[in-house]
Length: 522
Image 1 (cartoon, rainbow, N blue to C red):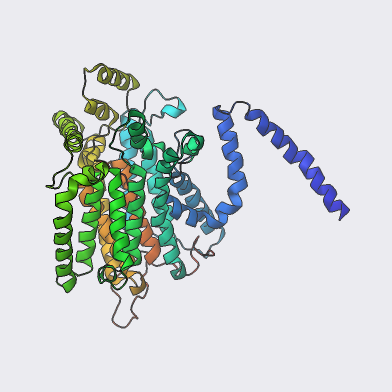
Image 2: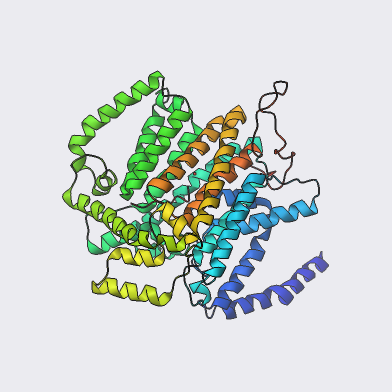
């Protein structure tokens, strides 16, 4: 026993004490890039045992969560870091343990590979991947990193089948992790003493709330709360069949769903209300409730709510009035003006951009931004010589899904995205039709969410880089839940029998003890 104690003391003096001294010396300059790298690598080493065992649950939880690491260059979100780490661990496990077979859906793999090639070639031709945080002369490279990390994240999510006993738990992780978006708004409410938490939660989710409080404006928009309610809304529809929610057998469920929509409206985003309605309608149709008594009951409820809410719309909180400003209701004139201006500058930007579109059809513009151009535009806006939309135009933030694909990656990138949508929707449809009955409602929700996101991306709002994370997350989660892409089984096979795409028991990463980046504007 004395020898063991002596060995421990020797270990402390030879390794731990010098390491602590070196770390303290590095922290003398906490803003130094070298210091951040050393601290990050040290934390990575200390967390390795946790990552080896829990990397996949952490990845699933982080996909829709709001955690960021502001101390690292570019403030990367947790899901981006976990995508690379989880995929690396899964690949190493498959190499070490030969019996492990990784899932692979060839159609999805090839379309994502083609999309990666298009993005890489565009970046190479248009000036490279410029990262301001790394001292590059060009800006805008973060979107490239987001795209590549998203594709890695898809493979990390989909390479191993999820155990049946864990589906409910992982579904909670995947969707309810979105509640973390509300923390940013709570930090503003709590006051400056808690502002250090913005090192781990995105300040962008609360920037409009902070601006309203600073300027004393009456219109206070809680963007983080709105994003959090999207996750709750998705989870309710994934956990409970829509027929059960609407049947009033459990009255708390429809009330909870309605409360989720109401709280989501506090963000003041018209797009949030449209997303809720679009997803609900598609889920309603997929569950074949259109020609049932529930359809008639829903119509009566909508008419009743309209009869009560429409005459009193101008009495609702201003943020809620802005969220429903696209409806034919009477609301506060200033709120309607604010919503109209938001739409008008988008239309002005699109009119200015469309004549330039032919220049980028073959080779996209990419994401590289000349910092001089950005500075000049910002100075012109501040001086009143340019409209606010010109800043977004220079930064490549077009507020339009089709334009974000066509302008940045041309026809090749747009065709690659369409191909990815096609094979993804086909896979989701097959999993919905032929998947196990135990996950049928979840498969219905994943398909409805994917379809609603595609429609929303094309018609309302979209950003190629950030919305790709939502698409890849949904299809990756579906592949993991269903063990691949299901196919119609022969009549002799039992219902729900696995297909050749389904992984063998014990596939990498999921044998463990036991949404949507949803980015909304408007």
